[in-house]
Length: 178
Image (cartoon, rainbow, N blue to C red):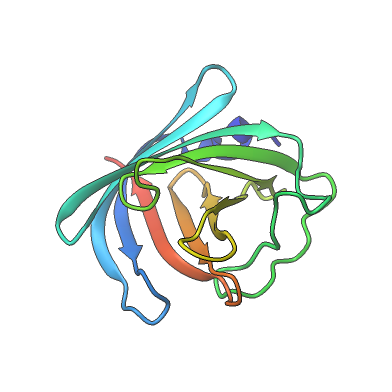
């Protein structure tokens, strides 16, 4: 399944809400969110989204493409985790690879993050990327895009801190804009 086939039910304009927490012990903060998902340059998909943190507008963009499955040699991908932090089942060998570039006014600051992962047989995109920590080994992000069935979709993001279980930072859910 290609990125366009996977995200076909999620193309269009969406309204929803964004839940954010910084640390795993924090309460989630909710804000209104909107997203626009579209095909660009023939074989890529963009997800542009908005949300807020402490009443300050924020925005982000994911540029997604299909690609070879990576991480089999351990070079770029980390183990994937479910929403509760448990290890996810192994992806089927026929899973398609996915690649992304991500920018977000709050999460990535002035730099972009590159991510690699898979498109599961059910269309869920699972991506992992790494960024330098202030000290010590790199930290990671996991972004999961659940394209839904044409009525709604979901994007979850997890922070991966060395020595700790990944924890969910963002849970954005969307319904088609009327």
